[in-house]
Amino acid sequence: MADIVLTTLNAKYIHAAFGLRYLLANLGPLQSRAALAEFDINQRPLDIVEALLAHQPQIIGFGVYIWNVEPTAVVIAALRRIRPEIKIILGGPEVSYETAGQSIVQLADHVITGEADLKFAEVCALLLAGGPTPPQVIAAELPDFCRLALPYDLYRTEDLAHRIVYIEASRGCPFTCEFCLSSLDIPVRAVPLPVLLEQLQKLLDRGLKQFKFVDRTFNLNIAVSRTILEFLLERSQPGHFFHFEMIPDRLPEPLREIIARFPPGMLQFEVGIQTFNPEVGQLISRRQNYEKLAENFAFLRQHTGVHLHADLIVGLPGESLESFATGFNRLVALDPQEIQVGILKRLRGTPIIRHDAEWGMTWHPHPPYEILCNRLIDFPTMQRLRRFAKYWDLVGNSGNFRHATPLIWRGTAPFPGFLRWSDWLYARIGRTDSIALVRLMELLFEFLTTELKLDPRLAAENLWQDYQNGGRFDKPGFMKDFLPAGPPRSSRPTASLPKRQARHLA
Image 1 (cartoon, rainbow, N blue to C red):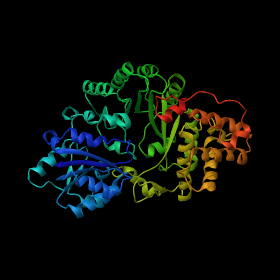
Image 2 (cartoon, helix red, strand yellow):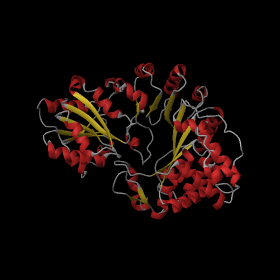
Image 3 (cartoon, rainbow, N blue to C red):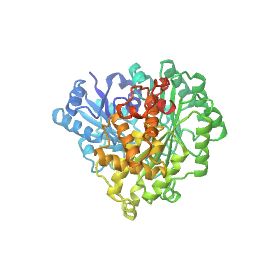
Image 4 (spheres, rainbow, N blue to C red):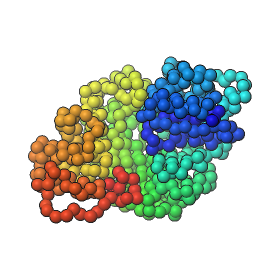
């Protein structure tokens, strides 16, 4: 039983809703009348409706994101038919911009745009007290962190043990990249450092092992980021894993010194490069120093145990297939453990649409609003690049093929070599998902030995080494004839790290 239910449909169970916990933490005297109800997008809408109505709420607040807007609209439409008197309040990035004309907005009583940490409590208090009806669309002022109650006590023991726990040291971004919602979130505002460190200590004391910081630019304030890293290093134990999103060309000596002291695999840096073409960067208002970026990558790979996850985007205005290929090859040469190849999305509110006419940007009308084609990359080529991205994640990023992957482009550059494999694989099986690991290995062995004419023993030895790195020791039948006799080696991935990162370090 709860008068207020805060809910959302997460992409997967493993993702714990950070925004909902902020809203609940800041409900003040209404918190005792509220409940948190998390679901995921794979659950049936009517089962979600049934679970929500079991609370007998007067108000339901929905967190709406690009990945859940369509199933959330189905849930709300059913609620409207069954219990039309329940007040529906929406919030989240998907409904914070371009609200006019959105069908989900038309289903709601109220929509709070922007950061609703404090505004949601105000609206709920007014509705429960029977006060004047607020407008349908309510703009929230940027809250001061000094006024916010932090949400970390609302992570349950099972959340800490089995889900991704999100943490923020700051909000906002000083950069103006036109494809990113964070470019609209100015200025950068920081959580008071003593308060944050106190909360981190509580999470450590409760046994949290994996910390994912969501700051867009964790290394913007060097003094603050160094203090946080020193705090975590002093308290680090085997099994701890800390994820940060970093500015790739900003890594001065004070940060380098502390980063180099972390054990291998304990730190993961996500670095958004997006493009290596300076003309494209200028078009989308993205500034970065490529020389300094390369220098920082070299330091991180040669002198630290940081796990590097780098991002590139397909479909940016002015970026041709050849330009993207050059950037991909350049990034592979910098040797991050993972390269995320993302397809450009047209997020609501972002100014990327100003290029639509000049560059022929054509977008999918439904979430996640990905680019379909543009003046330089036609639809069939964009489809090839979508498959390239999916297969790269299965092979290049997974850690399952660390030794075998470079064989794919032996004698050529990484991009054309992997694109050839991607085209071959799709022609062979006609799908990009639901491929068992051993089946994928067998297909790669076939490609290497028949299409590229590599020595079967070379292909088998590299695939077998990768297979063992994942902690598997049963020799797949297709490669037995090409492997030397004898027992497998005994090394296993580092069990205390997340599986993918452990495979990269094995």
